[in-house]
Image 1 (cartoon, rainbow, N blue to C red):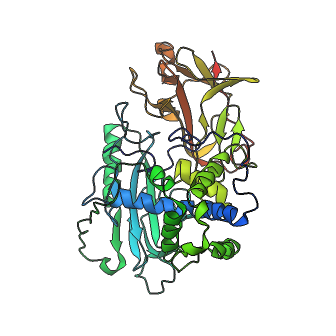
Image 2: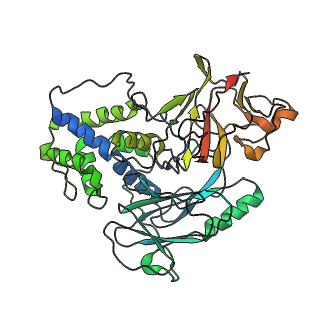
Image 3: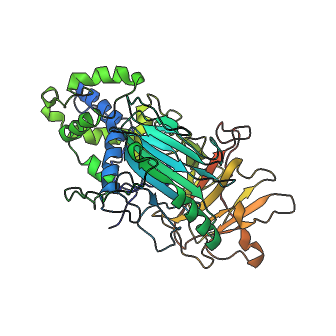
Length: 478
């Protein structure tokens, strides 16, 4: 089975990169009112947008965990999924793969009892294990930036849990029963480093609290044949009518409650039959709205690209956002990130600028392999990060590009050569720029292509992409 970005979504595989992954209505202007004067219609649209992350997270969980044992990008509830190597250009199962970190992930349900997650000693290796609740909020991020490289053990507890934990176990309280541990460990991709990271992955442990310190063997996963394992998750969510959607949302909110700051939204949703802790009362929803609500609501989500009021930045052809991971009451931004980059980190941990066009002054044009491009970092102005940075090459479908040196991304680990003035040129082109320049070469396909930069642990002091004091240079035609 092919795992699309919406079915697996192992990590943020590129914010702003997925608007072309599935068809959406082509809208260039703010939406017009299809039911003029019907305020409850627009209230239902607002409720749909509010609930989109929780519904999408649940549908993603169902698909990823609906297997008997761990295999590839899937694994039963409570079992760690370990991706062991980077894909090559023949890999088309997940869009926008990366060649920087190996994923170590798991879905757990902390509604009945806590789960204990142990991380081994990482020393100086960069890693992070963000933990997402059912609403896609990153509520904790153990990792190099936050907790260092020593061994760590955490008990992830659910809403309302009270109890005593074993000595040496730190409590991380999840606001919801659904938790997605979405770990990433840096790896250079050499045989020796693969081996070292595999050993670290194998030392990561996940057990229910009742079995902590015991010889626990995970049970065989339960497979539900009624779960659609072929259709992309986003498509499964988007094709629900409003009654089906709100019924599921209401059911999920019984164990994944809204936050205190959601109180105004919760009060409004009660008018159309959505009350946390109760089943959906469809009698309060006008039957004429049932089909139109999902269509208009998803269009509104995707329109946030153009009408984001600063949530999305576009600088010299690079599009990115620094508003991910923690959303507060910015429900529209939260829904957009769910739709295009489920699993997004906090900006302090990672930002993923994406570029589809070369920009030179006021002119911009889609990248094409028939042209040669150069991205120049002035002296001392390579990406300011404390973790690492890279630029990945994708074809127009967001897959790796076959090339003679098997290089899919470029970063400082390529031992980049500097010019006489201290600047660094990245050569982005189809043919080799010459043996003496190949250390700085990012091979491109013959056709259209897309660039994605990954900035892990961006510097929080100026210059920084976090406050806009550092900007990514444009890739210009040579």
